[in-house]
Structure formats: C-alpha cells, structure tokens
Image 1 (cartoon, one colour):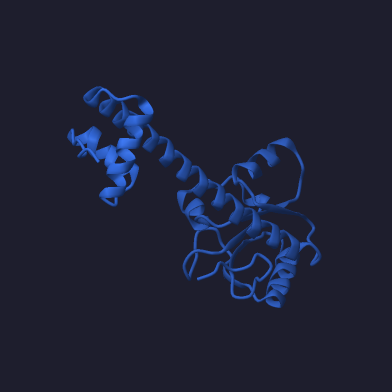
Image 2 (image 1 turned 90 degrees about the horizontal axis):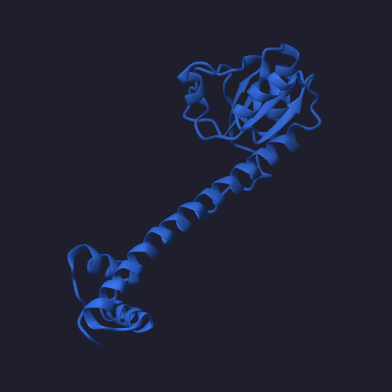
Length: 194
C-alpha cells in the first residue's frame, strides 16, 4: 500500500482548536473545499480515531492536561500564531509544530501550511526510522565484534580470518552474520569450520 501524497488532502481528518469564530469559519470553509473532515473542535475529544493533522490556536497553550496532549497523538501540528512574543513562541515550539499560520487567518496559505505539515511529518518519520535502523546496526556491530574476538582467541585467527569464518558459517546455515554472532557470544556456540 502506497503512502498518501502530501498534496492530496481529500479524506484526511483534522482536529481544529480555534477560539476566534471568524478564523474557525475560514478554516472550516477551506477544509470543505479540500475534502478534509473535521473530527473534533476541542482538544479533549476526538470522535473518530486519531486526526491526521491538528490546527492549534496559540491561545489554547500550554496544553496542560494529558488528555489534550493525547488528543494530538502522533499527527503533525499546525500552530496558529496571534502574537510573536518570546513566551508565546516558546509555548508554540513545545508543540513541535510542523507548520504555522498567522492570525487573522485568510483562506490563502492554509493549503500550503497543510502540505508543508504533512511533508515535514513524513520526512521526520523517515528520519526516525533511519535512526532506529542505525542504532540497531550499531548494537549488532558490538555483537559481531565480540564474536570475532571470541573466534580469534578460540581458533588463533587474525581478525579478517575470524570474520570470514563467521561469514562462511552464516552463509552455510542461511543466517545473518548478526544471528551467528549472537549465538557465538550468548551461547558460546562455535560454528563448524568450513
């Protein structure tokens, strides 16, 4: 299943928490045009699952209750800025917004803020996945190194020869080098000489 395009917004769900009625009506009208459903207009209640995006008025900050923070889930946040004071901007930055809009709102700019928010969220998720993979590889490298050292000492081999020995054993047993290395270090397993 392919991921939805950041430019295609139809069918997405949004949590909208805006105090000013004029701004709220502009957002609602623009969302209708874009095909975005508003699932909640309050920070504490999300009716149909988690939203895909949240528009949060800076007048609702700070988000004090755990229910308010939970309502956002993992969705990208678009902050609506009314003032640019350092204290207000600090509260907005605590949300880690993916995009922002300046009040008073106009219909122009809402689509761009949504696209930027979805794209930033997608890129951030990809970077998090890459970091997790790299952390896993780093942990596995330690295991491989420990196994290489163990084989070096047990068989009186050089480091390249010990690694080649582990690699051959992994290929013969149709396992990864990391799996064989874990068996060597954890169980004291010694692969057969190939």
